[in-house]
Length: 144
Image 1 (cartoon, one colour):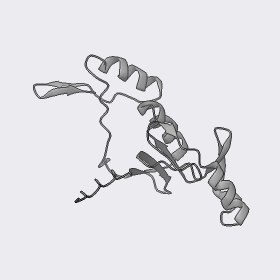
Image 2 (cartoon, one colour):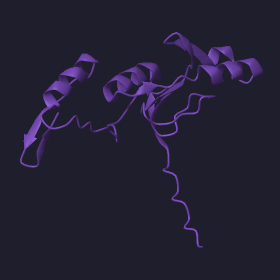
Image 3 (cartoon, one colour):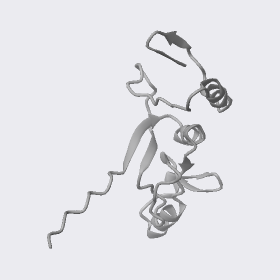
């Protein structure tokens, strides 16, 4: 009997985004995408206990310990490591950088709420703090 090789597991990924305030960005995108902010408090507690992480590298965020300079959001249905709280699927990681943005973003997320739901979704995102910079309606499509 010949065995066929098992299909490789899907690759889990994270998109890393530079931010001046990673926790605010994480809250916004978790709400916008209906993702979950990762809870790394157990890992942080262990690292603090081992002396491998200084206290000043942490902050309190949502009533628990978090890394001061990075925080991730993950898809709520994807698996995650219980020991670290780290997602094993679709993730956005926001990392603090000291410099401010100087040029146009080279990356953005397109959100697709579904047929006939654009205006409702734009209103929801604006309620979360987003701003509609322009509304485009042309032969090739429309977007905000």
